Length: 184
Image 1 (tube, rainbow, N blue to C red):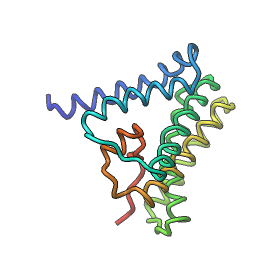
Image 2 (cartoon, rainbow, N blue to C red; image 1 turned 135 degrees about the vertical axis):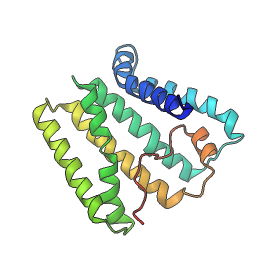
Image 3 (cartoon, rainbow, N blue to C red; image 1 turned 30 degrees about the horizontal axis):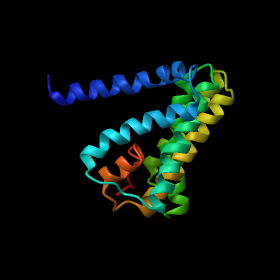
């Protein structure tokens, strides 16, 4: 078996388990404490590889948007919903928001296939929300996706040239990896 497939399987497994485990952990601690523990551990581990930190006002704003606000909203979403999977799906509407915000604030054109993707994604969200119980947690999940999208746009405008590993060690998972690249 190719090592790449093994690593991908491990990432999928751990990422998939994070939502039910977050729901369980939130019974014992606040969403703020959980976010702090999660990213402090990641920051300490990455610090060894990064061999330095990237810090400043822009990096702090990036961390607040892409880490603190996003993860706290996501944790609150999971805490206040009966369906953590729906919360996760709604938070991952971030690429839809990124595309719209990129066109609006970065003046990037939208390719017809991207527009089709936005329509299909939005239709899927409406079908999911309509067929399931939309509650406070669901709304917070959508808000988390929007905040993450704003953070992605902020990153693109202000921190694209930063040393990625040092930025991530300073504020773990602050890089907006899932944002769609600009269309060529």
